[in-house]
Length: 150
Image 1 (cartoon, rainbow, N blue to C red):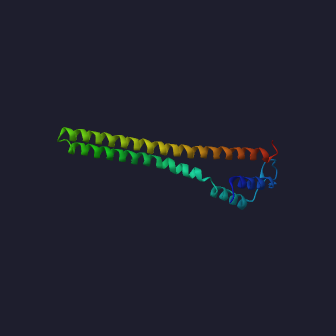
Image 2 (cartoon, rainbow, N blue to C red):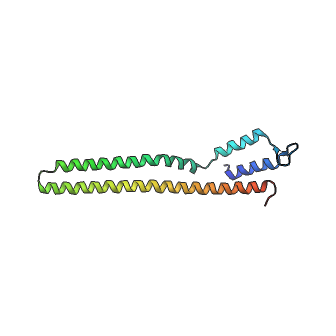
Image 3 (cartoon, rainbow, N blue to C red):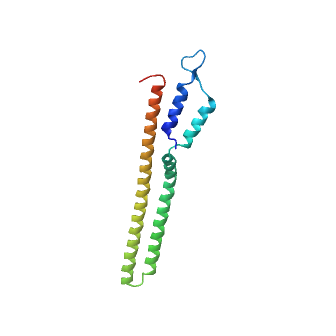
């Protein structure tokens, strides 16, 4: 399997062996189809974590909405149960306790889901940041090495 580093090396190799353009010290003539092939392969090997981070970011709002809907549903169920049980004082106490438990459970569930989605998104974004940092370092080194700059 090709890596981004291998593809960047191929790109660098093509550029270094390219012939100088007429009347220029900096311009070179490269094989267009070879360059496009390398670019296509780079795109095909684009880090999966970047694609997954974009998906997680998009899914985050849906997860939060689902948690809120779930919490509201549990709270509505608790309120309905409490109203139904309001006939005697013992029943009222039990209903209040059940409603409180359901409310706490809903809030805890929402907090867990929110924390988990944020943690997952944060972890993915850290991986993306590291991948991009590594890629930028390699690109910077490759640029510096193009014309013998050390």
